[in-house]
Image 1 (cartoon, helix red, strand yellow):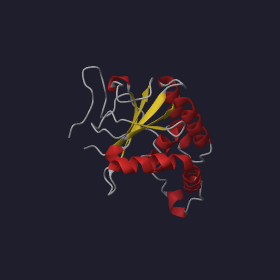
Image 2 (image 1 turned 90 degrees about the vertical axis):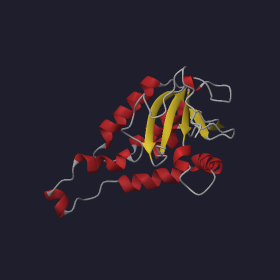
Image 3 (image 1 turned 135 degrees about the horizontal axis):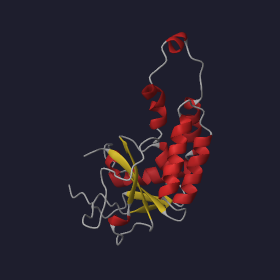
Image 4 (image 1 turned 90 degrees about the horizontal axis):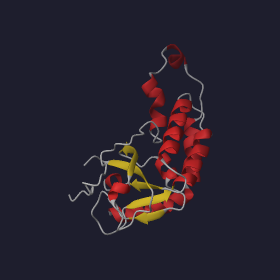
Length: 194
Protein backbone atom coordinates (compact mmCIF):
# COMPACT_ATOMS: atom_id res chain seq x y z
CA UNK A 1 0.00 0.00 0.00
CA UNK A 2 1.43 3.34 -1.05
CA UNK A 3 -0.83 5.52 1.19
CA UNK A 4 -1.32 8.24 -1.38
CA UNK A 5 -4.20 10.25 -2.75
CA UNK A 6 -4.40 10.27 -6.54
CA UNK A 7 -5.76 12.87 -8.94
CA UNK A 8 -6.75 11.90 -12.48
CA UNK A 9 -8.56 13.56 -15.37
CA UNK A 10 -11.25 11.90 -17.47
CA UNK A 11 -13.33 12.82 -20.49
CA UNK A 12 -16.37 11.11 -18.95
CA UNK A 13 -17.86 10.96 -15.49
CA UNK A 14 -16.61 7.67 -14.06
CA UNK A 15 -19.31 5.13 -13.28
CA UNK A 16 -19.66 1.37 -12.98
CA UNK A 17 -19.41 0.94 -16.77
CA UNK A 18 -16.52 3.36 -17.40
CA UNK A 19 -13.17 1.89 -18.27
CA UNK A 20 -10.27 2.92 -16.02
CA UNK A 21 -8.24 3.40 -19.22
CA UNK A 22 -10.09 6.72 -19.68
CA UNK A 23 -8.23 8.11 -16.63
CA UNK A 24 -5.10 10.20 -17.19
CA UNK A 25 -2.64 10.83 -14.39
CA UNK A 26 -2.42 14.36 -12.98
CA UNK A 27 -0.79 14.09 -9.53
CA UNK A 28 -0.40 12.08 -6.34
CA UNK A 29 0.35 13.07 -2.77
CA UNK A 30 1.62 10.93 0.11
CA UNK A 31 -0.27 10.59 3.40
CA UNK A 32 -2.81 13.37 2.79
CA UNK A 33 -5.54 14.70 0.55
CA UNK A 34 -4.02 18.14 -0.02
CA UNK A 35 -6.05 21.34 -0.22
CA UNK A 36 -5.27 21.83 -3.91
CA UNK A 37 -6.71 18.39 -4.80
CA UNK A 38 -9.84 19.21 -2.82
CA UNK A 39 -10.21 22.56 -4.58
CA UNK A 40 -9.77 21.00 -8.02
CA UNK A 41 -12.53 18.45 -7.41
CA UNK A 42 -14.85 20.82 -5.50
CA UNK A 43 -17.06 21.99 -8.39
CA UNK A 44 -20.09 19.91 -9.42
CA UNK A 45 -18.72 17.16 -7.17
CA UNK A 46 -20.14 13.67 -7.49
CA UNK A 47 -19.26 10.42 -5.73
CA UNK A 48 -18.15 7.72 -8.15
CA UNK A 49 -16.84 4.18 -8.22
CA UNK A 50 -13.12 3.81 -7.62
CA UNK A 51 -10.86 2.63 -10.43
CA UNK A 52 -8.34 1.44 -7.84
CA UNK A 53 -10.53 -0.36 -5.30
CA UNK A 54 -12.85 -3.15 -6.39
CA UNK A 55 -15.67 -2.08 -4.08
CA UNK A 56 -19.34 -1.45 -4.92
CA UNK A 57 -19.67 1.76 -2.88
CA UNK A 58 -18.33 5.03 -4.32
CA UNK A 59 -14.82 5.54 -2.96
CA UNK A 60 -13.77 8.27 -5.42
CA UNK A 61 -14.97 11.80 -6.11
CA UNK A 62 -15.30 13.60 -9.45
CA UNK A 63 -15.58 17.33 -10.13
CA UNK A 64 -15.54 19.50 -13.26
CA UNK A 65 -12.07 20.54 -14.47
CA UNK A 66 -12.76 24.08 -15.71
CA UNK A 67 -14.41 25.45 -12.56
CA UNK A 68 -11.99 23.47 -10.36
CA UNK A 69 -8.94 24.99 -12.04
CA UNK A 70 -10.48 28.47 -11.79
CA UNK A 71 -11.09 27.99 -8.06
CA UNK A 72 -7.56 26.65 -7.51
CA UNK A 73 -6.05 29.52 -9.55
CA UNK A 74 -7.93 32.11 -7.45
CA UNK A 75 -6.56 30.50 -4.28
CA UNK A 76 -2.99 30.28 -5.62
CA UNK A 77 -3.10 33.95 -6.69
CA UNK A 78 -3.70 34.95 -3.07
CA UNK A 79 -0.67 33.14 -1.65
CA UNK A 80 2.23 35.33 -0.59
CA UNK A 81 5.23 33.07 -0.26
CA UNK A 82 8.74 33.26 -1.76
CA UNK A 83 8.42 29.86 -3.50
CA UNK A 84 4.90 30.24 -4.92
CA UNK A 85 5.46 31.95 -8.27
CA UNK A 86 7.23 29.18 -10.23
CA UNK A 87 5.18 26.43 -8.59
CA UNK A 88 1.90 28.25 -9.31
CA UNK A 89 2.90 28.76 -12.96
CA UNK A 90 3.94 25.11 -13.30
CA UNK A 91 0.65 23.90 -11.80
CA UNK A 92 -1.62 26.03 -13.97
CA UNK A 93 0.37 25.25 -17.13
CA UNK A 94 0.26 21.49 -16.44
CA UNK A 95 -3.46 21.49 -15.60
CA UNK A 96 -4.46 23.63 -18.59
CA UNK A 97 -2.35 21.58 -21.01
CA UNK A 98 -3.74 18.23 -19.85
CA UNK A 99 -7.42 18.95 -19.26
CA UNK A 100 -10.36 20.60 -20.96
CA UNK A 101 -12.93 22.65 -19.01
CA UNK A 102 -15.75 20.14 -19.62
CA UNK A 103 -13.70 17.15 -18.41
CA UNK A 104 -13.68 15.71 -14.89
CA UNK A 105 -11.04 15.54 -12.20
CA UNK A 106 -11.25 12.22 -10.36
CA UNK A 107 -9.89 12.10 -6.82
CA UNK A 108 -9.01 8.68 -5.39
CA UNK A 109 -8.54 9.27 -1.62
CA UNK A 110 -9.27 5.78 -0.22
CA UNK A 111 -5.66 4.76 0.47
CA UNK A 112 -5.13 7.79 2.70
CA UNK A 113 -8.58 7.80 4.28
CA UNK A 114 -8.27 4.07 4.97
CA UNK A 115 -5.50 4.84 7.47
CA UNK A 116 -8.10 6.31 9.86
CA UNK A 117 -10.54 4.56 12.17
CA UNK A 118 -13.73 5.29 10.22
CA UNK A 119 -14.92 2.99 7.43
CA UNK A 120 -13.48 4.24 4.13
CA UNK A 121 -16.87 4.88 2.50
CA UNK A 122 -17.89 7.08 5.46
CA UNK A 123 -14.57 8.96 5.33
CA UNK A 124 -15.00 9.60 1.58
CA UNK A 125 -18.52 10.92 2.17
CA UNK A 126 -17.24 13.18 4.97
CA UNK A 127 -14.56 14.47 2.58
CA UNK A 128 -17.22 15.13 -0.08
CA UNK A 129 -19.39 17.06 2.36
CA UNK A 130 -16.36 19.09 3.48
CA UNK A 131 -15.74 20.26 -0.10
CA UNK A 132 -18.71 22.58 0.24
CA UNK A 133 -16.98 24.52 3.02
CA UNK A 134 -13.35 24.95 1.97
CA UNK A 135 -13.30 28.70 2.60
CA UNK A 136 -12.23 28.25 6.23
CA UNK A 137 -9.37 25.94 5.13
CA UNK A 138 -8.34 28.47 2.49
CA UNK A 139 -8.20 31.37 4.96
CA UNK A 140 -6.35 29.31 7.57
CA UNK A 141 -3.81 28.21 4.96
CA UNK A 142 -3.28 31.73 3.66
CA UNK A 143 -2.65 32.93 7.22
CA UNK A 144 0.00 30.26 7.82
CA UNK A 145 1.74 31.09 4.52
CA UNK A 146 1.75 34.87 5.04
CA UNK A 147 5.26 36.36 5.12
CA UNK A 148 6.79 36.88 8.55
CA UNK A 149 9.86 38.86 9.52
CA UNK A 150 12.95 36.67 9.55
CA UNK A 151 14.79 36.31 12.83
CA UNK A 152 18.52 36.86 13.11
CA UNK A 153 19.37 33.19 12.53
CA UNK A 154 17.24 33.04 9.39
CA UNK A 155 19.01 36.12 8.07
CA UNK A 156 22.47 34.71 8.86
CA UNK A 157 21.72 31.13 7.77
CA UNK A 158 19.00 31.18 5.11
CA UNK A 159 17.04 27.91 4.96
CA UNK A 160 17.60 25.47 2.11
CA UNK A 161 15.23 25.75 -0.86
CA UNK A 162 13.67 22.40 0.09
CA UNK A 163 12.73 23.82 3.50
CA UNK A 164 11.32 27.00 1.94
CA UNK A 165 9.18 24.97 -0.52
CA UNK A 166 7.89 22.42 2.03
CA UNK A 167 4.70 24.28 3.06
CA UNK A 168 3.87 24.94 -0.61
CA UNK A 169 4.36 21.29 -1.54
CA UNK A 170 2.01 20.29 1.31
CA UNK A 171 -0.75 22.08 -0.62
CA UNK A 172 -0.32 19.56 -3.45
CA UNK A 173 2.00 21.62 -5.64
CA UNK A 174 5.11 20.30 -7.35
CA UNK A 175 4.01 16.69 -7.89
CA UNK A 176 2.53 16.86 -11.43
CA UNK A 177 2.96 13.75 -13.55
CA UNK A 178 1.17 11.74 -16.21
CA UNK A 179 2.48 8.55 -14.61
CA UNK A 180 1.20 7.77 -11.14
CA UNK A 181 1.60 4.72 -8.90
CA UNK A 182 -1.74 3.55 -10.34
CA UNK A 183 -1.66 4.25 -14.07
CA UNK A 184 -4.20 2.69 -16.36
CA UNK A 185 -4.11 1.35 -19.89
CA UNK A 186 -6.43 -0.83 -21.95
CA UNK A 187 -4.62 -4.06 -20.98
CA UNK A 188 -4.87 -3.41 -17.22
CA UNK A 189 -8.08 -2.41 -15.51
CA UNK A 190 -6.00 -1.00 -12.62
CA UNK A 191 -8.10 -2.49 -9.87
CA UNK A 192 -6.43 -3.51 -6.65
CA UNK A 193 -8.09 -6.70 -5.46
CA UNK A 194 -6.16 -6.81 -2.18
